[in-house]
Length: 186
Image (tube, rainbow, N blue to C red):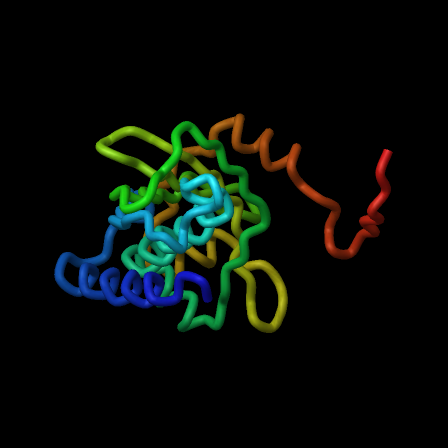
């Protein structure tokens, strides 16, 4: 709820853009222009590291709506969850600094879709986050990619997932929710 007004504005903007310009391809780059607000800052006067993930959610909302995935999710009673994410920082965003959240569906494997989000200032990447997400059914179970693309009425023409992304997903995975995952420190 900490970015609720920005979220609502992003949803309205994405719907207006889709109505005016039509649906975009699944591999399109979505762009949401923002500005660093006082509530985004930490004690050091730059954007709090945790805020990036919340603001990158705005890019995800924009992309889901403009690609038509949002409508498919609602029609089929699906929802998306983030399974893992990693962010890398290059430069700090400071108070009132304008920046753009760029978001793109990067690819998929048999269970997850992968997105890249960037905080960009004047064409320069300040931070980048990779997200592994899953589409789930309200009644339980994972939505397969074939079913997802069929619901979109589009072929699955995304490029193959780069090897480094598959390696990252495997290296950062926790045990399944059906398996034990005790908190043991070595």
